[in-house]
Image (tube, rainbow, N blue to C red; front, side, top):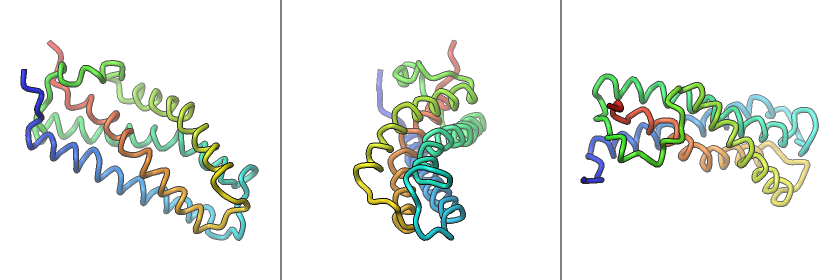
Length: 166
């Protein structure tokens, strides 16, 4: 069996599952952080309106919302024939992901909260001085989006281009 993806499939993965969600996640992360924290002179690690609370919330909400949107758009593209379906055997490593988009979103959000959350807290506590200024927070939020969005988008969208199981 040929395991090579077609040019259309590779293009879709590169643009619709990697590049577009990455750009959107960067803009949303930056924009929300700017709206919430732009009036702050000094942002604390923990407490009300803190970097820690915002980071932990992001490690859950970004995967949840990203998965729902990317999976829905990918399902629509696959259903309309815009992206050729992939035989299930070629994506067998994704068999652990639920077919149901909401369940997949909740699972990826929970995994992210339990894995990326603690890692982000360690990076924050050891890699930054507090209180933090808004510019540093914006860089942190963009960095989180850059690290989190690509794998989440792939895990959200690839199950949607699987050919129906016989």
